[in-house]
Amino acid sequence: MSDEIPYDDTNDFQWTQKAYELIVAGDLNAEHEVPGGIQVVRIWGLCPRCEHHLDLRSKVVDHLESRPGRPVRGPKIAKVPIDVTCGCDELHPGSPAGVLGCGVNFRIKFSNE
Image (cartoon, rainbow, N blue to C red; front, side, top):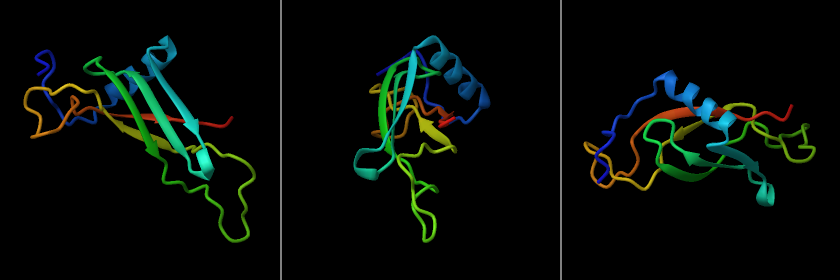
């Protein structure tokens, strides 16, 4: 059990700011993939709160998918923020039964600009 940082299901904006700083420093990475036409994001590196390693993949529920009269022209990157929850492999004190990670939630925004 990780004894440094207790579990906290927090959405405080400071963790989004810290995630941005980690991305700039190269300690947190984010990439967008479109395997088989399904948008997937991968986030890996240090958690902005507990600083344990995380490696997450998630399908993006996408408002950019093709609609009648609006075909998708090649891979698109979601321009909406992606909510990320710490997914480190550590059991933090005070976490709900069987839940790994420190509980922090932060956002990462992808852009195709």
